[in-house]
Image (cartoon, rainbow, N blue to C red; front, side):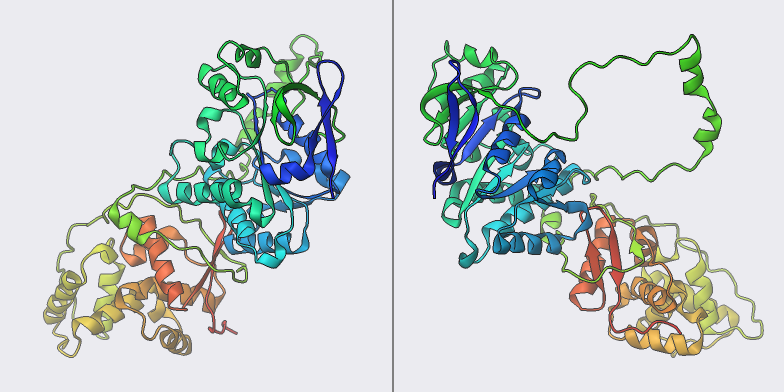
Length: 503
């Protein structure tokens, strides 16, 4: 099966097209500054070959979701799915030959990059019986295959470069034909750009981009000036699927439109003198006092690339059932040393009726900063207070003290005896240093309360570092004691298997 799709007209009005069968074998690179018509060209190409070949579009700005209305593409809202669900969706896309748009516009930049990398990798890793021909269009490819690291952390950069390199270098044998579009060639990794055999170069002004475009088109420095003079929607094409010699093309019209704002001028609204100021200031104080909509938190700074971070970097989380009570997002951050409050003074304990080792442990646990103290220091404080109160404590060694302290600081000792017994049985065998935060999770699950957030888990764990809290959850999950679900929208939730809720 062969198909020749029309993308526009040449200088003399002749039709300029692309051989679709050749394109599937040789890949395409599109370059053009913002406003050069790059997205218009991609839309024209996709519209003309819709129905002829499967289309998979990586869309960081949400521009191509309108193809769904006219051509039946399935829109995948990446923010609604977990990492494992994204990989499974990619496998089903290959199996069922569905044309899809992976809409990443609701995610932060680094989450977009990780999501696209996982999706592309799963496309590439599909079983051999699903290696059907497909166009894989990656808009703003300089984000996903950057020439320099920038602010992206090392793990994410390796993941996305591997995915893009596999697409452009090894994807052909798996039926994947990469079409990458970028605003600047200088920002696109060379090993990704070099694998394309077809080129459509739009307007660019920077000398370094103009020279790279001219080199790809086989033009000398003087001829490269043509690239600067191109108008919006004009491109220079070259390659076995387009033309054996550089040819100018003016891209034709499209049937669908993006969701961006209008490009043309529109009249300003007319208003009487003072009316516009009144519109701006009317009931301003009331609007400012109203609750503000929740804004997505900014992405955390990239973690320090040191040995500890490399050894303890979290693994991908498995697919689980969504919990109705989400845990607050746990951003990656450089690990900071836990605060060490001044040691608590060994205050005398009144020898009142009912005083007991449990009572003294609870008083120590409720003191400010108690969880950040070394267990040995708290145990010494416990022994001193018991002697001052005349309470026998020799039967409590430091191991038993740590568990009793965890029960007190988590609030387990305030529950009814039946609930205490059920939760203590579920926590049997958990390491002493992890026990307090795990008990808090069990209590929330048993009582039907919201799961403790990052700050509370960190306090119970005795650490102010979000990355240590993340590693704690990862450790508990590997032991099968909790299940953590995280989607690309930043929502994280915890569920506890095999623990019955309170009646």
